[in-house]
Length: 191
Image (cartoon, rainbow, N blue to C red; front, side, top):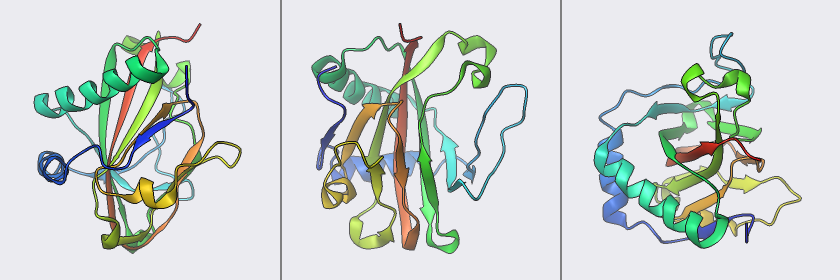
């Protein structure tokens, strides 16, 4: 791994952001939940996370995001990835949508039986909303990690890629809505 994270503040075009939102709006949003174990149901914990999400299955979008993540992985991270999950996330002013400090890794206990040997390795966030349309909702890493300049991370079309084990957060949205696409690249367990 050459870097702890990679970002480009204008990688995805406005037209592609519009197309992604159009595709994602075909899916039903649900309150975001947290999953600690396959033996327990996922739970909604508004003290840890307030957002609405939909897992997306769309051929164009899968090809689009897997292309970005694959190139980034080849250029920077060089980890073994074989599969992608896509989640559309909306943080709303009405409930001060946020996500507290967390990792995107799933413990083996939380993985579905068909994916027990696969770990989330890379996480990618694509910022879909114009920064003038909301306040708050800032993405950041844990304090001891190098940070992405706040204004760069907020730009529409910004892409942030990082290892899924790095702690990160989204601060509460105090005005408007923040829409983003989150993608996880998975592969065989770390060795």
